Image (cartoon, rainbow, N blue to C red; front, side, top):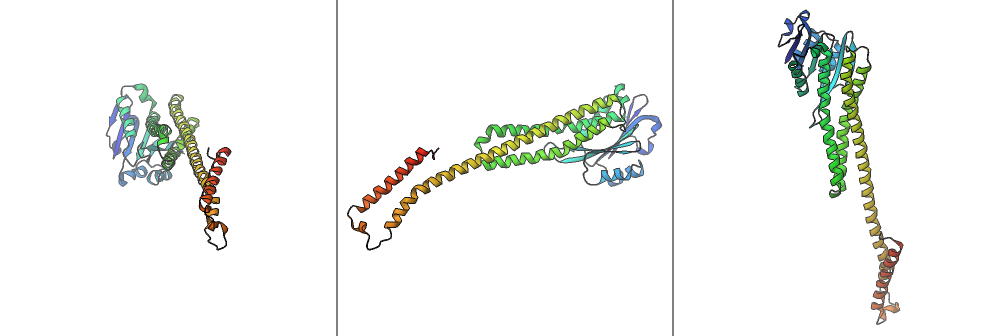
Length: 319
């Protein structure tokens, strides 16, 4: 579906104009949104708008990294929309010029719809209309970035719960949850860090069609992305600390178990030696014919075991 929004020179909004009937001289600027377009509608990027083939290729092919390219008087943005629940990334492409903005996304996106409605609802705010397509681009970017926060907050809540209730879970379950969180943080980082670099380039570029007032708005988005980046890095460090703590805890438990088994084995080694000697049943073993040999050997084995346990206690092996 292709939808159009045009702003007249008298700051009135007109929607639903067919592309073939748009006369740029009649409007201050226009917004054309390719909302889940069909293949035939996608071809209009080339046949109607005559955008650069490389930019069109980026729109129609595999998910691209967030970036900004310049084509004559046109800026091409690749942005990422994020599903807070699944962390699935959807590409949003913007073509920005002085009097036109064209957005392209292969799926319907709530963020773009919100930006679209916000422009229409502020029809009487002439100061906003005077900002032109750059304000539309800001609006779309701002909505996209705002949807990043719930995903990061969700992970922080899970980390807090993991810290508070981690003692009631097995180490294996804790490690699986930590590695799951680290994997989700990596997905977020792959989207948020390139978006941060993109906004830094927008703020410091001389080619983007924006005034100092516009850059204040883009700077606000950049600040949000910086905050998100710091939160992700802090969460990654926390998961790394939790991982190391659980590994150390597991190692300590294994060492304690091995120490206990070693002590038990050490105690029974001399007892096994004595039992093995008198279990050989040789003919010339004087003790075998002695009346009190059996209880004496048992007392010897018992005393030896008790003595070794007391000696281990004194040495602190049971601590």
